[in-house]
Length: 453
Image (cartoon, one colour):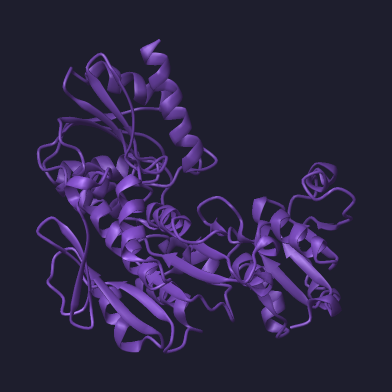
């Protein structure tokens, strides 16, 4: 598509919208930004764009006439495709792209695209680290915090790109075609937006909808939803498994990560040689090995990178030890399944901080995963009562309510004994209390440092 002939409207004036506007501006394509906040500080937004770049604004309540005025819409992932601004363009059969689709229109090189309910950030960061062992030009982008749009014009035919892609971003991909895609797992999350698990799973699987038989999709054999995706994939499916001895794929046998291909076995490294905690990270490593092997990275380079890699921020991140108590920041545990992995990684009696925004999740399996490890559960936010009720139903009664995050931290410090761990792994999004999980995690770490003095 020739974008230079189009009048383009960008919905959303946040980091994604600004990234899209900047990319189009650098490519010599003017665009307007729409935002529902009619009091938006236009000068502040414009100041975040490249110097000298002009941008126009459409502000306030959305009017359908805008879909007549503009030829296509670039939709920020925070805005659902079911919102009026998107529906107005769909009804008129005008293109609705997201930031991933837009960036891939300009990007060059080979793309490894990673999605899944949990483990995306760690796996994407690890994939980036492995790619850097072999490729000279590597970009790690997407939902990991660096908009793909911000670097698309910097890529070359020799570049390798690791992209973490959320279900929100996948709603608006059309011709996006990665060299290697991966769906790590699918468990209930974001059902307030996607409605049903079937829609949510299909959205995840759409990461590979434009791939061909010469390309690869890496799938988790141990997850029944992702395992079933192999049957309908247009790309060549490669399975990984932590639990099963596959005839082909990436496996963990005893303590050794192994690539099995065409009757050959290629050991990579052992669990004793890595620095990541928890069996969930073994799955992330298996996935990353598969992704990068099929991106052309030699096994010895994969081994070197996996052995050096340490945990990403906000994912079971050790913060400090204060008065004999270990503090772990797992703020990225924004749904029950992710939080189960957080508590499973703990090896000490644990004071657990949970609760936050209500994404219509259920908490039974999370509570069941406590397995006697959790001494106290401190709950806060919109989901506090629902979590407390679930805990009581499952026979766990050491639940304490906190009105604020700071109060929750004070209670945790008071209840923790030397030899315990305090774990922030909320099983909920941060919205309503914090802008995002990163801010929540940073506040947790700041308070821990104050405890230490």
